Length: 179
Length: 107
Image 1 (tube, each protein chain N blue to C red):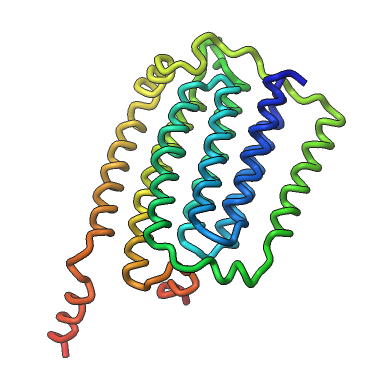
Image 2 (image 1 turned 30 degrees about the horizontal axis):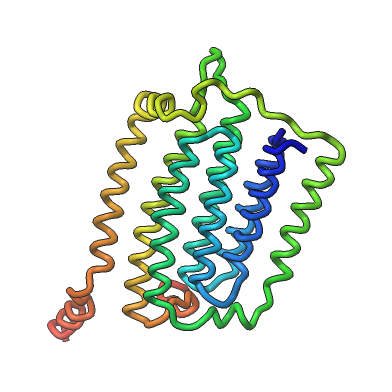
């Protein structure tokens, strides 16, 4: 097994086990968030091995950097008690069955066929320049729509989480007027 | 050599784990994290398929998979922003994040 393949299987194992920890650990959401961080970093390693270097960088910056940190901070703010329902149900065998079936599939597959190798990557496969040219020519409309989506998300988040302007107040006033 | 099928298998495994998290967990934050896991799995599939078909029909480099991975990352960021503000609003209103209690729209 070559070094690259070994690194890939190590990163895949880390991603899979930390992904399972995100879902099936019961104690705290903070631990789940940090496991999600480990998953994101492992997936970024896989992106590097696939020579998609820019995507790996973005994966580290946005999902691992911004999104997971936001999730962890929010879970620190709202942490109360562990998931009581999950404690009642033992779902760990469920996860073990999923992983077992998938590992069996991969094992059987690689037993009977060596797998398909990737073709050699073009020179600028993971480079930002070529990717930017694709994004701003073929997908210019999608990039514009994405900026609108992000703007809408900012506005929506501000409205949803702004503390005052109690909707209950306006509701009761309207009710009072009707009665 | 990394076998192409194993990259896709890893992506499928991560997606299944995330989907089972959405189905099993009853904590809003845990569901958000599981959705994020599913999006990452989709990204892995996009980049893996892009790496497997690196040229379009004319022989030029095709980077569509990576472009879509960027789109998925941006949509995931927007989804998390709105989701987290829903978390904050729900915690303010109910004092818990249990999705069993948020059953107003259920018949």
